[in-house]
Image (cartoon, rainbow, N blue to C red; front, side):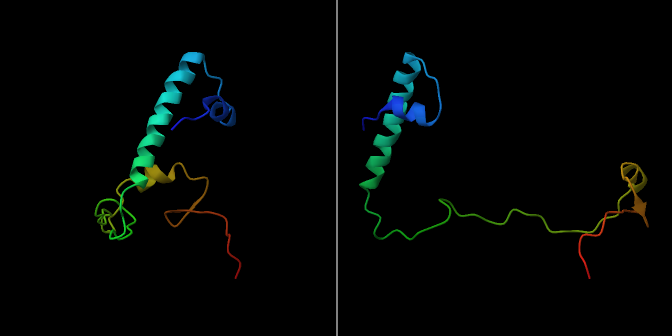
Length: 93
């Protein structure tokens, strides 16, 4: 697919040299040619998916564990109360 690299560079606010225009123009043209080839594929019997490969939950289980260096952590707190950071109230009752 032939593209106008000057127009693309202008829209992207890029100042390209002639060599860059030639190189990037060819690369972008190749990408668009490949996308055009993909459009020719018959996908009538392909179910839509949100991911190309199966995904599984990779999150770990939440566990409550004691903190051993609470005093060191609270040294950074502007204010503390009952061994916790004290923050301004943001929810009105």
